[in-house]
Image 1: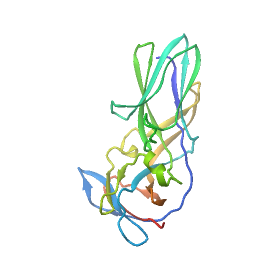
Image 2 (image 1 turned 60 degrees about the horizontal axis):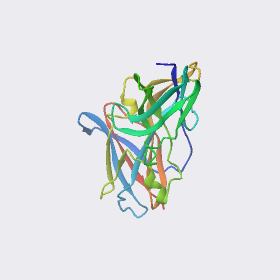
Image 3 (image 1 turned 45 degrees about the horizontal axis):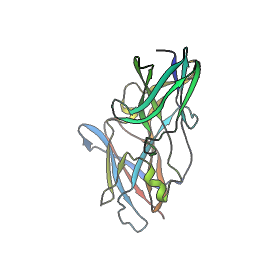
Length: 235
């Protein structure tokens, strides 16, 4: 395949922190879980709250994911995104004819329905002139601060609270659970610009259409023990 490289880029913003974290020994299918309850200022459970994780990394990058191609000959290029190790297409990023040169394709982190996907691992596939298909792995980060009201519907969640305000999320498919969680940062010429890895420290958000977002920062997700997170919306 012709010189394909990727820049992995991240959005990091700041919002209000409310909450607490503690560890326990409960598990789900032998993988630790993240679980807890969300209540409002009256101590009433809040259902339909979206739980969204974002990950701590060594370096802060820019807020979009950019894919670069170096095309040697006039070619039709198709590029599409899937979840890591899955086959369903989230979004087709390109399916057009390109002249020779360096091609830049941006992904804004949204699927074909304009829903912003959760932070984590994704695969992007590329095919030139209906030839060999190449797959590369990438990681996407963002923080859902200032997401309120009708905007909440356009954000995917790792999990959602039930009628009792409870939630549970297995750590099995989260990025820090993979062995190969180290990434290189490349420029458009494929030159190494730096490296980073995904640690087990996460920031956990709760968003809901009727409340301001809240989060718990710097939560360590143990590889053996599950972690409980309890939130309280203030407004």
